Image (cartoon, rainbow, N blue to C red; front, side, top):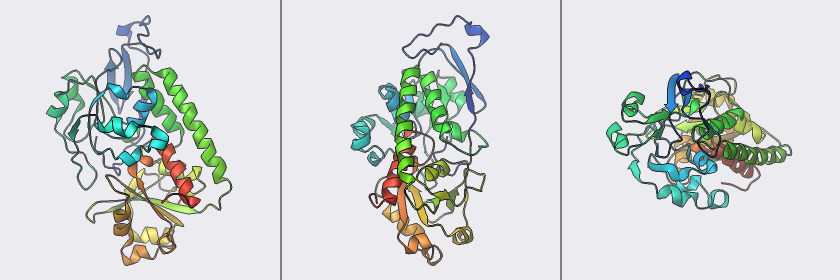
Length: 333
């Protein structure tokens, strides 16, 4: 799966009952109560897991905090992509940044549009039983022939409805079932819900306002904005802001300068990937005369945010909501 944040894919995954071949007496063979063989649908593809996966390869960055929250990050044998340590601050995630850094890297080659560049053979060489993510050049069929099943973050599967925090719960439960960690999944959901309640409680005292969430193509390409099908909308709602593009059904779309000027949001959140604090990305986006005239730019209400703190639905989106709240209250930059 491309890591490009503007890939217009959506939510489409569910679990099904064990296939008839597995029999109704299939035993739960792990601590979380999952019965194997487990058959489920993911992106309109049937995935069957004979047992709880123990050799996971990460081809997208988003699942890290899900796996960590489920207590199974030690099952990851290799990773590909860019995993900025700033995504996992010690105050929230303990030593997670160091543990992620210790996982062997297959590729950290990301093009200007955010796509991971990797060849399938390097993945197969790891002998995984589960691969998370499906970038260009890697196929389900090719991995299945080597004994690996694939799960794609469900937001990337097809046409997406309006996003909600229920998507986060569903994503955690999907991974918890696959990895035989159902109890841990429910504990993680409860912890995140408590944190989100605190964000909303604080937001009730704020003035509110409007916001646009943008992603620029590196090197001066198109500028993208996030609509109703992205987690940007519920995240902004949680901190008391309104997404100016919430009326756009797409998850992400190319945004014209004219549309941004017409919307003239009170705040701007600019997403980026990679190292650094994002100040260079802010300068690139707001440096033009047209966008420099936006109220949010004139009044200094622009925040750079690591992409996975807003998209897709993982525990990092709760981190991102807390950070947005702190920023609105004058604490984060």
